Image (cartoon, rainbow, N blue to C red; front, side, top):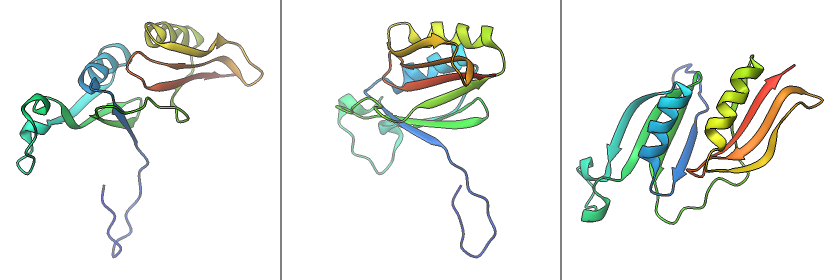
Length: 141
């Protein structure tokens, strides 16, 4: 959404993740396992103004998906660093579902804080998935 100074528009905060050449795989994984819905994908080859090298034609310049009531956007960026201090946070109202998603996202990834009960949550975990995106899973008490 673009804001127009002459109108009273609302603002949205969305998340944009640069993936290390695996944006399509990540989005398809999130769509399959998290119930997201990919709403658009644009490759470098589809951009009229881009003179992308042949090896980049099928890489994603911009993708968008709806996930958990929010919008996640992403792109394939060579040599990008994985997310380090920002987290995609999923809020749950069911501990069993939190555990299920934890198992899916942590497979092949890196666990920073294992799933456990805390003073503020029935279940809480922090991890990086196999695509380099960092996640917090939170089932509040």
